[in-house]
Image (tube, rainbow, N blue to C red; front, side):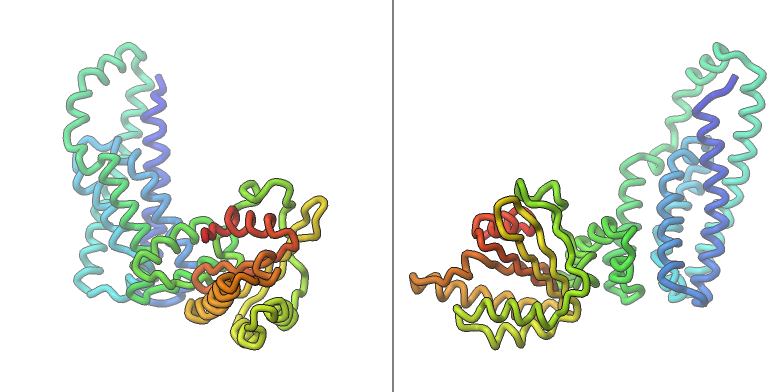
Amino acid sequence: MIDPAVERQYSDTKELLALWNTFHQFFTMGKSGQEITPEKENQFLEIKSRIAMLHDSFMDALTANQNVGQEVLSIITRAITLKHLGRLSTADVKKMEMDWHESYLLLNDTIAALEHKREELSQINETQYKAGIAAGAARQKAGKFFGSFYFKLAAIIVVVLGATIGVQMFGIYDYNELGKISALKTPFQWGKYAVRMVDPDSTWPTIDSAYRKGHSGWPEGVKPPVTEAGADKASGVQTIARRTAPIGIMPQMAAALDKAVEYRKETAEKSGEEPVEIYSFRFNNADDAKAVEKLWDDAESRVNTSGNAPEIVRQMDAVRDVNLVTFVFSKRGETMRAIVVKVYGKND
């Protein structure tokens, strides 16, 4: 007979063995400190993630040496990044190599045992096999503590935090490099929020890497925004500065926005209205963005208090996300406000 559980364990453990060999190749690269690139770091993280996913199946196949099997997760947790491996002491490297070799032998033994089990299963009928499974159920529960879901979840969290907060804190790898890879945008954003637990002003590396609610969450009737090709920063600075003239901050706003290192203009159509205009300015640091935000907020507050606020404060608003400042403009103030609140999450 064929047991799907055994077949899965056999397939997963064989894949895990192949990944374990590849992990060792990267480990050797990391400890030597040679040929380490952002692409290699990304591949290394992907390998570790796949190993963690396959580990459950491998542990399910073990009937002994659970502690050795658990070392697989321990090793990938300790190997934070390739650059981090190059900074480990000789003693730590030797210990990891010994643990890797012991796990490697166990993986090979487990595959051999599963092959033997598959052969035995092929010679018995299903009724006999189910009886054997029932008799051994109690034994299989022994030694499962370190293979439990909660322990593995904790180990995976440690790997993720080490690859985000840890690498930033110790200067091992610039996590922002991942934000420039479009395929990693979503996991990068998750990691960025983890990084900001210890560094609230951790910057966005590009405008596109920053989080913004998907179009399904935009106000009803507003079409997806379209980026203006070849938008010129100088023109965008002049446009925003000119619009702030009625509230008395035109020259200051122009000087503050001119510090931006990246600029993007978008327009979003809405039936029966003139297009909504969205101007995004990215700065090298959060302080420059905060200066723009404060300039706008102070002026807006001042004119609102005066009781004679210019129309521009009802048509335009500024939203800051760390080092990114976005101005949303619409002649229909209700549309502008809805986008600022629903899309960018600004609450007055």
